[in-house]
Length: 388
Image 1 (tube, rainbow, N blue to C red):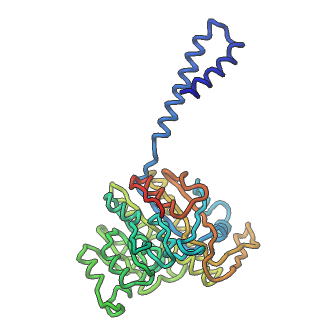
Image 2: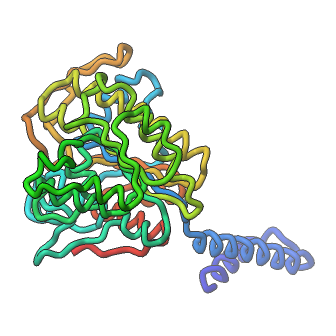
Image 3: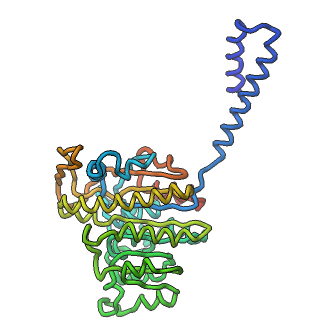
């Protein structure tokens, strides 16, 4: 109020030399009304917190800025899905105990808002088990799920449901997956659910059946699936590489979204382009190019849905960068990149963040990776856990 009156007084002082006394009263009234309306609009704007009904968290495993720009160039012109995001930022990826995170600690940060030691999945000091934003969404009555191009037990998908001190505890993770309550889960790793391949000899698929899940083994079966909870184990081990696996990522993502979106209370899901990381570990530029093209196709489909829906927040980022990728040269007109790799492991570089939909502007700037799920929780009305 004091600022408003000060501004009004300043404006009136200037107006005195231009306005007659007879018109002064009217001028005061008009200016007071205008500033009052502006004040009301500002208050209303500040009170209107964006509340998306759905959130889709997309992870390009190992995808740093060079990988993204290589994808933008390869898409030719303005055809890259990355150029459709109105807000961008960066994420700091270090783990609790290392400058260079692994996917387990990176995934945990993105789903729980906590830094943990490398190789830990949602597992903190003194065996603390951290709840994920997907746990919170499920508790709020929302539907949840994930689609990945890795095993469903790999570190990033496991960060949506698992709690283990070592990411390769596949027997334990498969049991936790069977009890997690996700509505849709798509990936590979069928062999880990078969008793002959397990040290404990247990049958987590029986647990899933008792909990009302349909388990499918092919993309055609997933596409035909009409409703309920589904686990799609599309590959015995890891999924095929792009382009050999075809359009699995985009079609599985679209099917998962269609199933999850039936819930009027909304949904929360993760999609991962898992093998961007694997291509960079292998220092294989052709493999990387194919995985990025596959990722682009999925991104376009997700953005199209979000823009039609109007109530979906989409956040795209990475758990870390892999390979120390650089682009010393290329050809914009031809869509080619000279991709060079520093080495075959992760780096500690910041990674990009892209956002679209209600509340997207909160993801701009440089932020901790742990801030991403905290912001999502707040925007979705799920509360917010502070980092350690």
